Image (cartoon, rainbow, N blue to C red; front, side):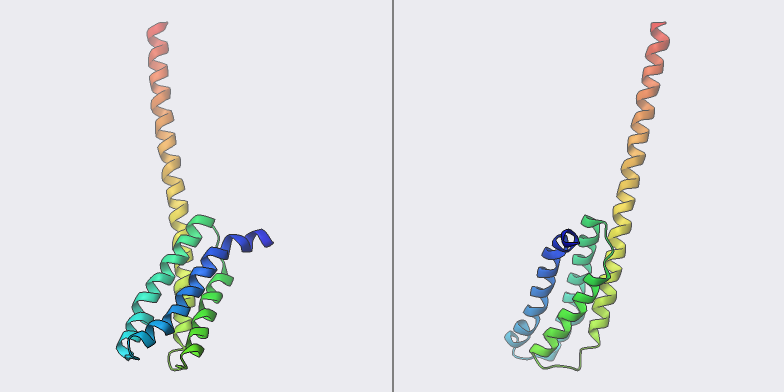
Amino acid sequence: MLKTHIKKLPYFIFTFLLFVLLPIAYHFFNNKSEAMINMVVIIFTTFTFIVSLIYSYNNEDFSYSFAIFTGICFLISCVIFWNFEIYIYALLYIFLSLCGQGSGYVVKKLVRFIKYLYVLVRRKKRNRKLVKNNKKNS
């Protein structure tokens, strides 16, 4: 049980730091709402999707707890800079985290299938070569 959570730890830390940086960056841009909207809607959603995809690709795991943790981190960042108008985006982050995990899982299975086909083709070629050599030798 603990082993599965330890595998998730680097992704949890990165996600948490990402959303802790959100209010800091918001105040760095002098509280401009357009900068916050760009960060919330474009940049952080892309990062969330990519981190979830990498997590699922590396671990071949589909974790609801990771997606919910992403939403909770966003809600914490809303509390930090006292902007509760955008808390509905937490659902977007949970959804994108689940989509990223699903995509990562499918990509990993597709890569494995392509490698499997490649090995089969190589074996078939090698077997043909061996059959030709056996016919020549006999």
